[in-house]
Amino acid sequence: MVFGKWRAAATPTPDTAEMIAALPSAVVLVNPERQIAEANSAAESLFNQSRTTMLGRDLVDVLRKPDGGELFDQELSDETPIAAYDIDLLRQDQRTIRVDLMATPMPDRPGWLLICLHNRSTPYLSVAGNRRSVSRTAVGAAAMLAHEIKNPLSGIRGAAQLIQSDADDSAAAMTRLICNEVDRITALIDRMEGFTDTRAFTPQPVNIHAVLGHAIEIAQHGFGQHVEFREIYDPSLPDVLGDHDLLVQVVLNLVKNAAEALEHTANPQITLTTAYRTGVMLAERRNGRQQRRSLPIEVCVIDNGPGVADDIADHLFEPFVSTRTDRPGGLGLALVDKLVRDLGGMIEYTRDVDRGQTVFRMLLPRVEGKSGKGA
Image (cartoon, rainbow, N blue to C red; front, side):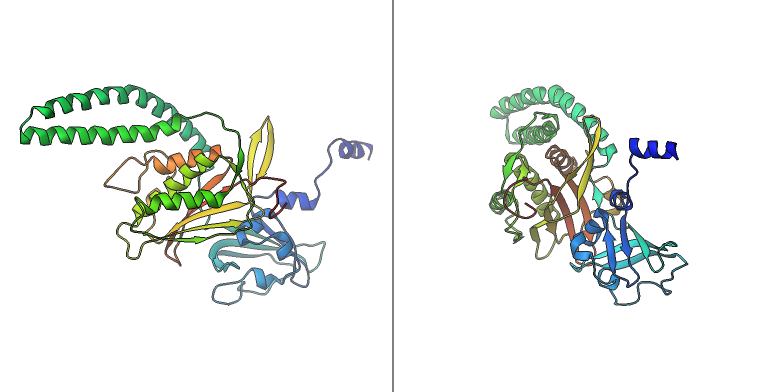
């Protein structure tokens, strides 16, 4: 007993609520009246509802099947766990998610159930540890190639221009081809140099809607002339904590990527949305300690194009992976990944099959202590 008291004093045991909150999978606690008594942050993210919104609601109001049918093939029991694999649930925003579900009775609390859900439709995230390693490798490769290749290119182009001035029509056409190819390679190197920029920046409050409006204006006067743009914003959002120029670069890359994907799509449309999402946390290690950062500002770039092939979806944010066969390179999304992580956020890709939409979703930190949601 003395030893047990000493351990408790030295290392306090986490309570049940703390343990549930720390779980990476969505967990919902249901009382005997089949009402939600507790939900962790992963459940908030999965169902796109805050914990306070879910508490006290009937289970069937939150865990709904799209066809309105029964969630379980058998009655919920106080003794026997129930598992349901690869089932579809309908969220309050009318989006369908696919999950594996396990409902486990609590022997010491008759009528209570602990429901765990694993999201099988998890979007393709760009924040995995292996992506950081790949990104560091890309930084070194970009710096080396930019130094070794870019300087000779200017000499090749200059020589081609000199030849072109005294050449006949046939030779002039060939020198123009050389110049065009040199310009194409130089543009690729310029994009690679974005990886070598490791300069620190001081985070500042940024109005994300001003960033999005600026990006749309640029797109409408250039690469996005053939696209209809839609804006669905939450005007009450607080400022993003970040850098204005980096955010413009990120959004422009995403919008340009979407516009290129719509080249052969009838009625091409790009939708930009903003929203405030509670419960989304990013775990990171700082100063030797594990910390969690809230990322409540959601920015989505959505297009009605054909989407990404399944065989490259898992590698979409890696360098030199491209969705285009006519112009290989694949540095745009890899650079977006790097910049978003530099901004302290995360980005994910998902395909909404029901709506025929491709979604790139950014989650960014907010400015604390300002007026607005959650202040």
